Picture 1 (tube, rainbow, N blue to C red):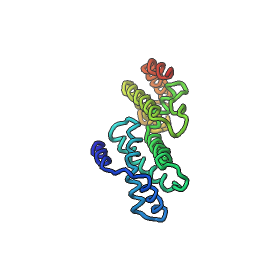
Picture 2: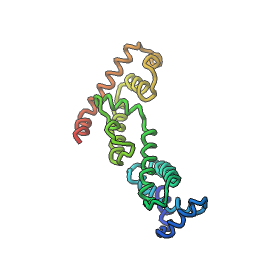
Picture 3: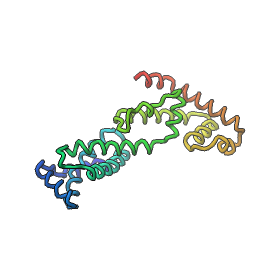
Picture 4: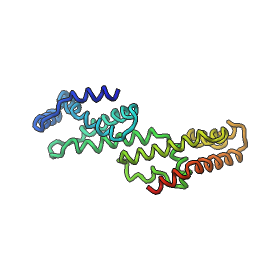
Length: 211
């Protein structure tokens, strides 16, 4: 799918500066055809930013869709008379839309859990702004994947407790009733599970926090 999309983009003709200027003038007057022509010409920019995150094909296609939303929003607020290149102006909005999508689609429960495992530190706290770099987001996703893999190796009861409390955001009492144990035992299982995961990821977390 991604390759087919790229092949279609390669057919998109580039705009000469004078031609683009005229299209912006026409679009400002409500010419929908001019607006569409401009948006089509900037689809390769959205593709370039999306692929810079180096994610899988399905996620990259999702980022492209989100980036197109950012592109349209940028066009709505762009003032061509200020002589600022639209590619520069739009890049921030496009990347921001993609980053917002990744943040909201992440499994927040794993972020909470990795915070406990990291004893208060999580990469999400270290991100300097909503325009996190592709490398930072890749590291964040790697950390969450490591936590998820470690959870799969826990005893069943501990998995059920961490799944319920962190990933499903259920109260401890509800988890206790669901697995038929006391509330106190749920908290013991929670601590044991977190301790086990921390042990499994000790070397990884040590190397991760040094970088």
